[in-house]
Length: 122
Image (cartoon, rainbow, N blue to C red; front, side):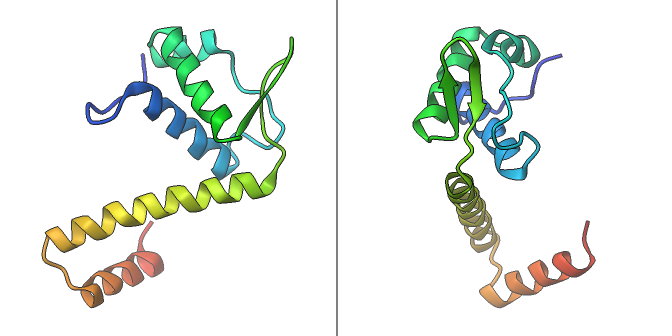
């Protein structure tokens, strides 16, 4: 069974973002090899060219390096990974804040909900 994709973002970007989250969270550790394009394409049930494009995106962000004949590996650069994590967090916060404003919540009400979730949520 393939991965679930949304229609509002190109699939290659969704694959890149998923892998980026796995790198930032440490699920795929620094220096660890990335699955092959063919394996990821099979797993996600997409065309290998789509995964190749996602890999290029991760290379452009310096999260993945290519070793000739050895495949692709997660960068060893901790600062690059931290910067990616901060960017992902900022994107999430932006989306969340926009949603809360749209729903009519004040900043104070939003912060209260965050505090409650942080302390008592999952």
